[in-house]
Every structure is written in C-alpha cells, then in structure tokens.
Image 1 (cartoon, rainbow, N blue to C red):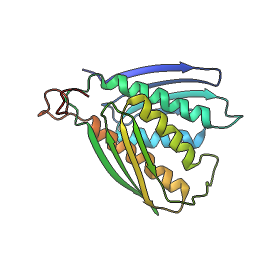
Image 2: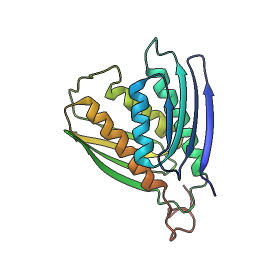
Image 3: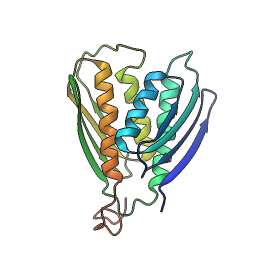
Image 4: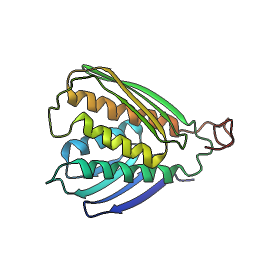
Length: 195
C-alpha cells in the first residue's frame, strides 16, 4: 500500500500545500519564498528519503514566523495521513548527525502523543533571518500535527547555519527509521495494542 498523502491549508496569513511519499527516494521540490527554509526542508527530504513537495505563500514581508509554523502544521498533517494506522512500523527512530562544528541527536517516537524537547547550546546568535528559534516553531507545529515525541539535542556547535542543518538532517534520518517497517510487528508496536 502506498504511503502517500497531500493537504492544503489556507488562512489570512498563509496558503500552503504539501505532498509526501514516505517510501520515496528523496525527490523534492520546495518553494516557500524563504530560501534557507527551502534548503532545510530539502535536507529533511533527502536524508529521510521522503519524496516531498511543499509550496507556501505567506506574509513574509511581516516576518517568516507564520509561513514556517503553518508549513510545520501542513507537513505534520500529510505525514500523519500517510502513516495511516501505523501498523507494522518500527515507531522509534534515532540519528546523530554531524555538520562540521555541530552535532545533533534526534530521537522520534510516533506514539500519537505530541511532545517536543529542543535543547540547543545557550547564547546562539542568528547569522540570518532564519534563527534556531524559528526552527523550533516549525518542529513544535510538526510534532503537534503528527502526534509524536521529538527530542532534539545539540550538545555543541558554534555556527547557527551548521547547527540548523544538522537538526533537519537528523530529524529526517530519525523519521526514516521510525516510519520503516519491521516484518515481526503484526499490529502496532505497543504493549497497549494501540498508539
């Protein structure tokens, strides 16, 4: 069965559409109007091996917040739809990904319960309009829309570009593992019998 989904969201602030194939090969097309965000979503798709298409239009003349957050909502929606009943999936995923001076550890649990831990080094200074704090808003929206635990920890790093890259790569890789199938899992991977 194909694990694909698409969705749209339209508000007074944004218009966003996304399409995903969980079992893809990393094909991607991003057009959010925010070049750095397109780059980060590309890293998520390529390293997660998801075929992902995202188009977003938002009030970026005000700032990037609405567009980034609402993209997280729509991406979480399509991931959740594509996963369906989650039968047979591994559920948990972990990745540690270096990017020069930075290292990110990302851990995923597709539990149905939203919770985000976002632990970055203190005292980071953004080197662009796309800050690590803005990335946090994206992941908070994603986590709530999918219904998953996501723990992101960057124990060290100096360059905020490298830190953000390592985060998106790690989350993509951890999601790839968590969404993978294990033939030994007949239903869902839970002692309760449901997620």
